Length: 163
Image 1 (cartoon, rainbow, N blue to C red):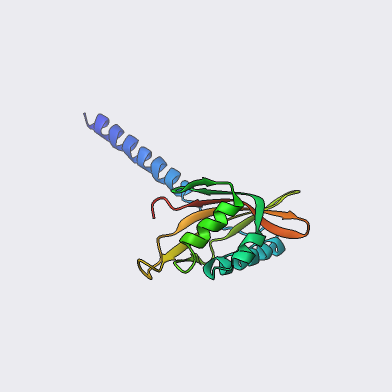
Image 2: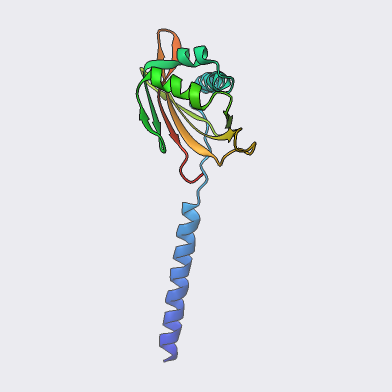
């Protein structure tokens, strides 16, 4: 009987050791480092130019940055594929009412050969009509196209589930 208890105890100890070791290995920390610091700086700059225009209702700059074939995916609002309608919705629902705040240090930028870049990050929004407290962070993905010597937002996904 003592041998059975000892064997069970050893088996339990081995199982626990394997479980803890596997858990420790899955806790690996990943640190982002841009492949190209120049591209990273360019896209971070373009993000700030766009959202400065967004926060200040500069519709001319926003229109210039959006590609004519823009697609805007919003987890709560759905898909919008009309540049004209997207700009009208921003003017009606955002201007003077909502501001975007980037989560510092959250941007990652990846080059897409022959096309441009993908920007991934987190941002928060302040709905000035409800509160001056920013929302919880939401994830965004922006496809930046480099065409005719200028950067344009081509596709955007804005994900706020779980805010």
